[in-house]
Image (cartoon, rainbow over all chains, first blue to last red; front, side, top):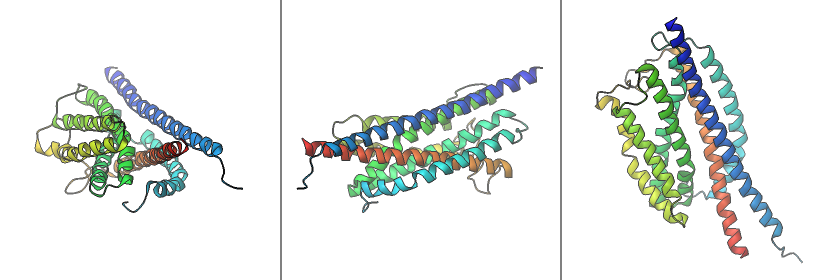
Length: 55
Length: 235
């Protein structure tokens, strides 16, 4: 009985570890991709607003 | 690296981003499958499965710091902007890896030793490495002009290189609670076949993820600088 509860306890901690890493990875990916997207958007906006020299 | 300018490297990285993402997906499915179905360790039970995140994250935090220190030296010697941008892109990812090592290691320590933290040589040197990463990241954002912050952070990265052998050999130099090396050691790895394979697949999975992040941060920094330059010319 005690052994079983120790096993469950260990399993919870292992799941916490994997959960922590998965959340960390997901949040990091979202932050990186969002900041990249916002910079690329700013660049495309500035390119659109730039006056062309063609005559 | 000295010849390549940030824009050329950024374009090169951009081509392989999707490939890296799909490789990561494939490796993560395989490694998760292996971790779920692998047999528990006789002594440690299920808690040993923490090793498949903890060990790759530890290797990567050391490896990334080694690369960061090396590119910082190249940047300082040759005044190469590409090297400084690579160091800038590696810094937050190295910090994430070292935080992962500390968190997963604490949980593993609680299950195995009965304590979340002990002032053991390996744990303490790893904590110092995390603080160096944190200091590096703070220095990168402390100055108004990026050239000054690159210079200051690079000096810290070069000094921080001294800590790498301390982390690696702490288990040999001092009597520690943390176990000794079981993969990279004289006489070959002491892990048996399937465990070693799972560990290596998990390592490659996290390595590819880190590369994907670093490449995207590199591209973001390069594009931000291009945007700032354009804005300056427009004004």
